[in-house]
Every structure is written in C-alpha cells, then in structure tokens.
Length: 137
Image 1 (tube, helix red, strand yellow):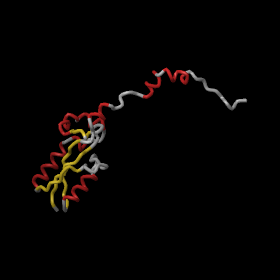
Image 2: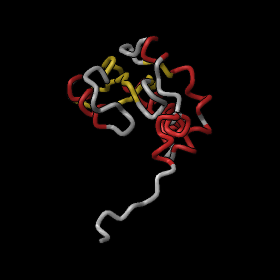
Image 3: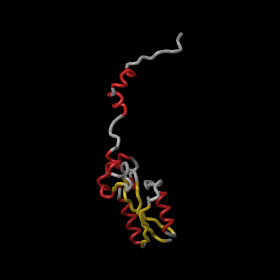
C-alpha cells in the first residue's frame, strides 16, 4: 500500500463556493485514492473537476496530515450551526468556483416573488376576490 495526499473541492460553504480540502489515503495507486476521496462526505461528488490533485507521499507526512485533519473542525462537525461557529478557521481556504462569473453574481435573486406580487397594481383585482361557488345552483 502506498500513501496519497488528495486535494479536493469540498462543499457546504455557500452557493458557488468550495473549500479546498486535503485528504490522506492508503491506496494501491493514485486513481484509487481519487475514487476514495470522491466517495468521502463533504467532497463534491457531482463535479468532474472535484479532485484537484493527487500526490504520493511517505508515511511520516501521511500520519502528520491525518492528525492535522482531526484538528480541523470542518471535517468533524455534524451540523450546519456547528460548522458556522468555526467558519473563521477555514475562511482562507474557501474559493469561488471558476465557472461563476461576476455577471451571474450581479443578477442573483434578491427579492421575494410574494413581495413583487403584493406591490404590483395589476394583481389588485385578485387580492380582493371573494370565493365564488360556481357549482351552487
């Protein structure tokens, strides 16, 4: 068995963002290490470019990396609230996806449809409408 360090895109850090996480695995080759990383919780499973790099390492770096990952709360927290408490710890490793443009961020939805419905005078007749029973004779 060989030791591998896999850098992967991890999720649960906001819309169109990813956490650049480093994971450590024992595997026969790099392809198997990448497959194991993709199956881990928090790694973005649905993206083709979720695995950023795979590097073969020695056992000393492997053990030190595993110990370091146990200290990072991002990998150990179980709820969103718990993760939010430790966001400052991982903030420097959060990046925006490459495919997200500034234009798409500018036009993000920032309003409620209900608010638009309530403020539009064209819908005034629908708001004051009473229930009519058409089947009553």
